[in-house]
Image 1 (cartoon, rainbow, N blue to C red):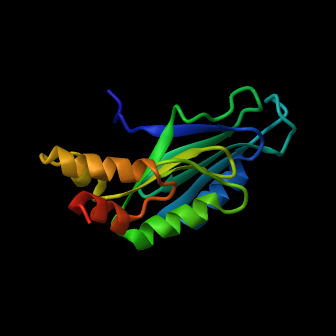
Image 2 (image 1 turned 180 degrees about the horizontal axis):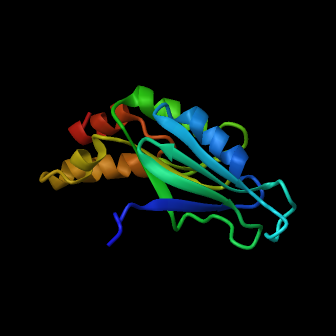
Length: 160
């Protein structure tokens, strides 16, 4: 039996190495693994990048230059749990830089089209509180936001 370790494979249209370098610049606890280049035995131009391995916060990824056939959609996203507003602001600004797009309720797409959720750690507490009126106020506030603002969410929860 194998170790069962999972690696997320991200299919890029020729930009896997650029994406890996970008993500490595965003996440502090990250590292780059091996890069596999096309040879005369593979379908791509010899010497160009086929795959690049990288790790972000302990999560393994493989960037694959597979072509334009399969673009990213919001059906798959990566959630970043943030300790405070400083972290929310950091990841939001870094991941939307260079052509990323803001979405609703803490969602965004980076410049490569990969979807991310930048979420403060307090969100589950606010949205699942036993006091439904408080939780509903927090939900209503969140639904009006793009980047999540912890102080505004907490104030809505508290009824302020």
